Image (cartoon, rainbow, N blue to C red; front, top):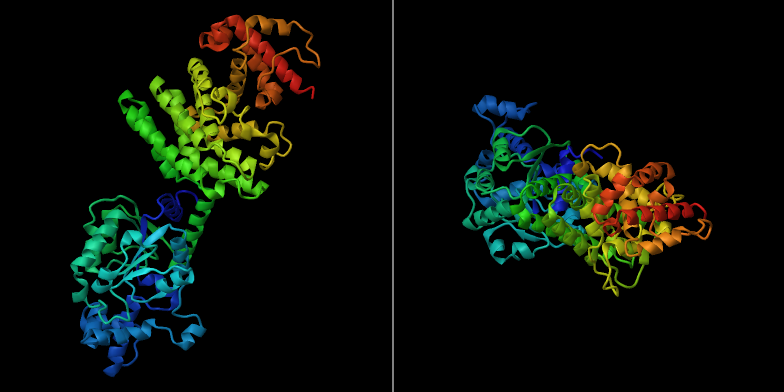
Length: 596
């Protein structure tokens, strides 16, 4: 798969992330593989037919001959107007170019192409709902019907007046030049100068409200269609223009006006097939648009810089929570699906993708957010947690891991606060209340941290690739995840191991704060044997098994300077000695892990 600089990939992201708000504008090039000729090819064939009727010998290049004879380029509209004086006659001329006969059907000509079929799949999945086309053929309608979709087709003012409203249609096809079976098709230059007011109104709405993917249309012949695009008042969504060669001057003008992104393609079939497959892949992985993520991060940085942007920051977080919650609560992410390692891996990848922007924003808040911004961030994290709490029935593991995005966001905030040495703020969030069924006293430290979360079961997370034998697979996975994905808020820090281990060790120390100091000291006086003369604390994470990395951290924790720093932040209830005693308990608890 090409990188994110690939315009087809970016088109797929845009369509996926803005489901149902992109329209297609299709020209004759989309029907090329069906051997329905383009307008230019029909023009040259019309030149040939006129010339041969007048006794002109066969030419190797009818276009060149026409220029030399008439002193101008052959014009499709001109020729058609000269050949036929009525709309009915023009329709009959076009009929042979478009309608398949028995032999055509046998040989697969003039039938829906791979491009039409790929577009139909995009319609079926709900990603595309509006198609504007200059084509007279019915290949698009036929491809949609093969997918079980009956489109709303508008090809005249009459059909427009009787059509289902745009917003209510599963697929709305607007054939701006008409349908080849209707004698009112538009072909000549005079007919293409302007559309009926009803058509202009509909085009204005489409080009204003929808993004565009243009393919198979040169932009050279259709003055009224060009005008409709050019008068669109804004650029709510991007415009992508897929073209086999360089755009002509008129097309470049349109593309520039719309801020269009040009996509070089070999043919429409390959383009739409690749586009459909990439959208399908994104739908399966729920990968967030990297451009969208960058935008969320940029907005968060701007808001965090000024206290007066608190409302905007809160709105940003709430929007992210709503979007992630929608992904979490889909039926396909519920507990009814049969358990499998593959499905578990798919869901973890989907959750990480859906929450990437939110997670990074939470990390930014940990580094730069003041007290108010931190409060809004924790409110958003706990709201996401509450939305994800398991329903009953189905796979317990699948239901429990729906809270993973909130756990991931909390861990980003924790790592950021610790890296910024904001130990007091970190200690406060450990006591933040969270909603839990049947537990009115639940706190972050008792249920949301990775080492105490109900979804952290070792046997479940060992289903990740290469984690089958890990003692703390979730911790190891989170360490790998943040090692690769924390630069947005930690900068270019090469090694986050100490910071990550402290995110496990400090909560373990805080878990002993509700004990009396005298009781903790008395417990330590006993022999530290198999019975374990220590108070239990959550240590069965990376901190418990990475001995060589935790050893220097514990040595540092026993220094009076660091102990005093933690005590002043609220650990040990502010008592320096209580922190030191708690550290001794944690060391014994870690040692006890290795006796089993």
